[in-house]
Length: 71
Image 1 (cartoon, rainbow, N blue to C red):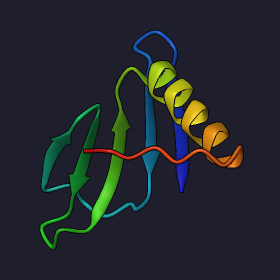
Image 2: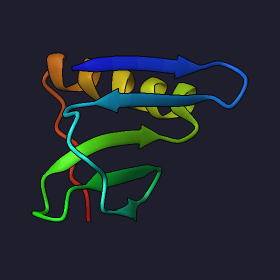
Image 3: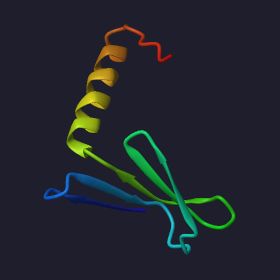
């Protein structure tokens, strides 16, 4: 697994495989690149600083016993 961050573009790249990419799907602020067999290869987290800040807030609330429901 390789993780790279582009400060200029504020994109976090998480490479989970070195297999060839066939297609990509966007899910909210994340673009997931897949092989032709539908295995994830690369995750692009757009607006990464904002995404990670929000993820950190959620994790901290869960540690404090709060539960957040997504609808």
